[in-house]
Length: 289
Image 1 (cartoon, rainbow, N blue to C red):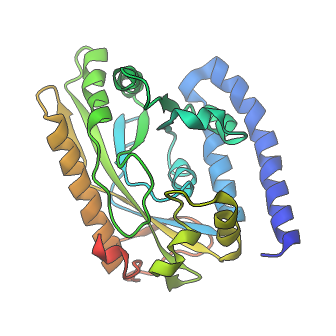
Image 2 (cartoon, rainbow, N blue to C red):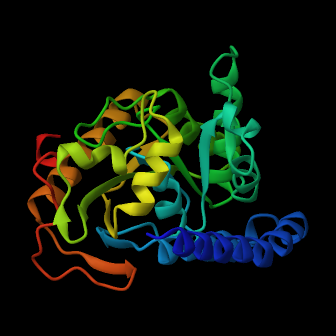
């Protein structure tokens, strides 16, 4: 992408934020969670401007159905992709609250922060998540606890899955909560399978420097993203938290393998080019998950 092209896209994104952000902030104060259109539009604008094309498979929660979404985590781009699909909020590390610009975007998304250095933070955050679930919201938890390189799935952590039980306690009469496994993969770029050497252009993990990564993201060309909603897991008062987390991890692992092999139907959701039926959406590296 040329410098002029990048400047035009960044300017367009800034204009979108100025048009959507202030009214959304006011509406949040007045309407609470019912103000949901602006984040969706902003995320979709970003995807359109930077040629990120999204397809989905599986069955997501019904509109207005509460769910604790347990997803794998590859890149900062996960947030834009998932945020473009449904009204929802994320759970994120507390350090993000001090990042310029990003902290403002996170606030507009009603992000729930967890301070991993503070004892007792898990219980507090679980209670907040549980309250939102009891109110019928979608809450996204990146259950690996960090980003990975996209070549393998890290073990899911179960601590914050206790929010499902908090939701049952917060709303008398609620007998169950939906745990929703969600797999996200970046199998193609410029129409070709992404190989291991190209992962750093999409995945952002470890101690990678942000500036070179963003430059590779901008200059690398269109990206295909596939989001797979796994089979939901019913969480009840007697459900074992660790067992439910393990089941969600297994669903995400199976979904990633399905994306890698091209199994299952896909439906286009965002982007100028739908995926063709039967198209192999997976690069060879994802198959090793």
